[in-house]
Image 1 (cartoon, protein in one colour):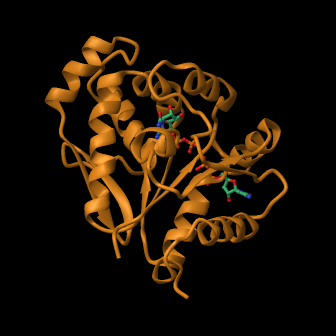
Image 2 (cartoon, rainbow, N blue to C red; image 1 turned 30 degrees about the vertical axis):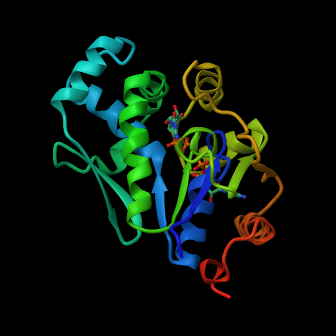
Length: 219
Ligand code: CDP
Ligand code: CDP
């Protein structure tokens, strides 16, 4: 079987990571969290005292810091100069910077290449903002998960995380390079009133409808 990419996109706290992780585990695929890669670049700007809005300085930093992508227990990993930033990737300072570094085309170019490389390792469930539109535009398996802003805010609050997600969504949707869009051919799922399990059931139906090989679906 040729390696397959399942693209899961959507705004903050729509449930992308949880759904992608559970689905990947169930199907034995590699789950790639692309947001963590953009967060790692944002985290590096804090470590190196680089202004995230100064694209020249961020681009210079890309040449001086090593970002290594890997897999552990079927989940993507990222090291910054050999260091795993861990939970620091979810901190408020990173939330505030990440959309700025993610708007820089050179940052995206570097990370999109790393994201495509994962397909050489096996079939992937990849979640982010531009997976169906830019990273794997030819995959038939594209899902866009949405939820109302109110529900998404409540989900983040329940996790005890400070995040101005409305602001981040706006920056992600308005940027010139690879904005958050419903990719051509993507199926939209509104998860506002669905449990994780219900979203997964729906994703599995979509994969089947779109001709995913039985070996992939495990039946
Ligand atoms: O978990 P949450 O949805 O809050 O965010 P994330 O997926 O960890 O992504 C963090 C940020 O990285 C987003 O707000 C985007 O600015 C950026 N991102 C992106 O530009 N493209 C992607 N494929 C994934 C994330
Ligand atoms: O990756 P993304 O930012 O899109 O969202 P997430 O981190 O997977 O999900 C945010 C939170 O919402 C998690 O705590 C999930 O357990 C919860 N969630 C939920 O309660 N119901 C759903 N249908 C989806 C997510």
